[in-house]
Amino acid sequence: MAETVIHHDSELPIPAAGKLAAFIEAVAVFKGFIKPYTPAASSNAHMRFRKDRYYLLRYYAWNMLLLFIGGLATHLLFANYYQMHFWPLWVVGLVLFVLPSFSLIFLSGAYYLALICVAQPHSFSLTSLGLVPLGILAGTISAALMHNAAHGNFRGVWLNRFWGEICGLFQLTGFAGWCISHFIHHAAPDHPEKDAHAPGDMSFRAYVNAMGPLMKTSLTLKYFEFHKENAHSRVTWALVGMLLPLVRFMRVLFVLLLLGPTAFVALYVPFKMANTLIYADFNYRTHRPTGNGGYEVLNLNHNLWYKLLNFVSFGSYFHKNHHRKANVFNPRYAGNDDKPLVTYHR
Image (cartoon, rainbow, N blue to C red; front, side, top):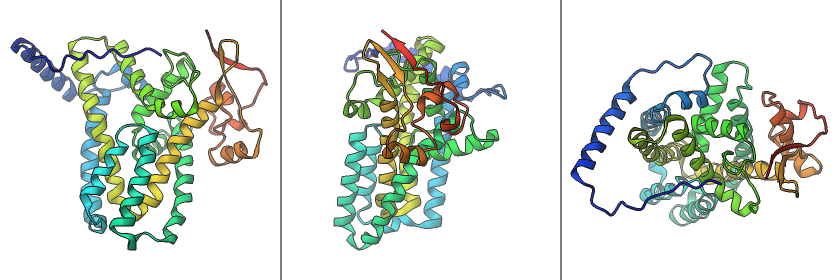
């Protein structure tokens, strides 16, 4: 996997000329950001990302504005904020969701379970535990819906955008970033430098934590490939990098205000854990080394566990079928020619 080189020069004083140049580029980025852009009617998120250097910057800026308005409206309508005892501890814990690491998401489950049991045990009962399997089920189904929305498999363009943005809100990724990474994955599956999240020879434990950072690195490399690496693109991408964790934080804060403390702990945290695991699991299990230096995509439905997962997730583990016919909602029915699909060979 290609590495992003980071120069550790932030402690060095920046010359006045450098500060002036950075300011000039920031002004130029702002002018480009506010300049109207009219995409082709058929263009998807990946095509807009390729053609418009400000696409993700605009997308995240609009997300911030809409999340602020939505969070305020949710607070006024439901007033779930008042149910949170020691509310700063509830807000601080949301930082665990900002970085796309399963270990931190798992830690968030322990954190919030301890918080609600200590700070307000009266609001968490055995009946609340009934929400846990619903959260796990919803997290699994949400992955399948996002996957299909990215490929335009719902009838009607607006339905794909609707389900994509709803899933992107609760998954914290956003629809645009998810689509772009997924198109990168389909363009070169299992290529160690070109795939957005190739499992390679990693263990599952390593992969579940590496998947998010791999996608971020892939997006960065593709951005500079499409828009050239110069002062203007570096400033633009740096602003995207600053907005992304803020948007993730605003999304999870919105979910907390929407659901309230009890449903957030019993429903949303299991949702997020299951959602992260299902993405990592079906990518890892279905993209495997062949043993002779190659990698292939598999269909998995050979035991009760995979049959259950395929039932719940609309055939997600029929992944070889999906790579051959990505525009079929349930790849179980895409047809299988029984020939191996070798995607990359060293």
